[in-house]
Length: 394
Image (cartoon, rainbow, N blue to C red; front, side):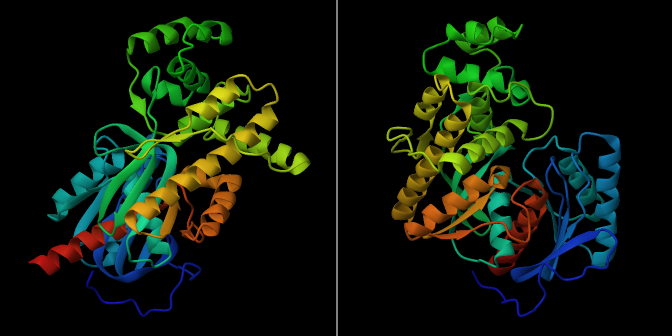
């Protein structure tokens, strides 16, 4: 894409003096002024102008009035500091997020266009922006949830990203969310979904006899009632945690995933890495990665720490093969990792090492975080490229 290269020497460790700004990222090339509103979880905003992207302090989850008021205040502070009307305002694709609704209000006030950005596209764009990488990239976006372009709950996505455009070239096998969003708070429901998927629906009530809703969940899964399906890697970690007896209900963010990582780390520190399950996954010709064979193994694993280690090593092997096949198909040899699952150090470091061993260049979060606090940076970089492309066309 045509554009002016960025020649500035600023970096993300630059001392930022503005009261609402936490971080400065030097963009791959100069951008028109845009404002990005961020995600619902761990919300932060971003203002991009010229070579610089300014990321605000985080306001937390937008599920309470105080956080929403802080979000509004920071947005207006950034507009004042911008000192000119933005060319666009970017927001998450989900229309019901408070950040999306406030973006509509601001855009109407300022008479500027809105740009809706898909969540996982933004995750990968944020990594590319940090690394000042401005070429096509394979994006592996793994997290809890983000609204997909098909209206479904995504979260285990293999994308081909080229600036403001992306193509979903693969995703995880879809699992049912028994009870919808409630399944994200009760990992045992994801384990029940796995049992249902492998033809063991009758085992749900006995395995989860302590859960009053077990029979209801088994019935819901059998009748496909209130069971939207998701490609979320976060929900796969939830299923693993429940099947291993490590976590059945959530008290804090990412509790189940953290429990699986900690259990695996204890085993690996004592015994080293176990071998990956040789038939622990399948990849369909359509690019769907199915991890059910690994989850089947976990249903009968009695040693939770060993099971967690086997889950990790098999997952890493599966993702490596998935990326290698995508690279061979697309001719793209650079991959970017984004999404909250990459807070997991076992996953991030070992997958990076395996990808590098097969000849792939890996971009990971360094100055920014891999989770939703970086979404606004990705939104801003995508929106800036949309504006630049329109200028080139017209």
